[in-house]
Image 1 (spheres, rainbow, N blue to C red):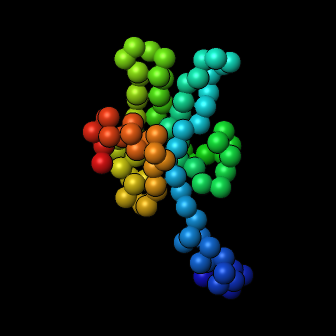
Image 2: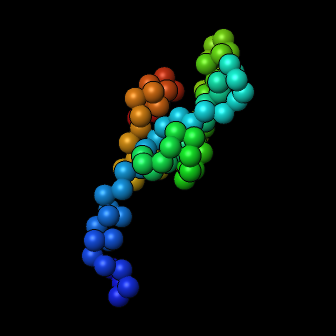
Length: 95
């Protein structure tokens, strides 16, 4: 906490929730998803902190590419995966 930063702002920084979730890319009727780290308050396709992988369910089998090192780092820092990302992590043997 600095001289210019009130105590409320210092506590708010500790309470901010960071999530691992999907954001949609690709065209109309061609969904491709990025696995991203984002503040849970941001919109689905809004501001992201970091992109850690991508997922395409239209290929057979589904294409799942994840940066395991970065994902483990974010999980260690307290980031919470969404239900869908949790399933992808389980499929890839992470966590």
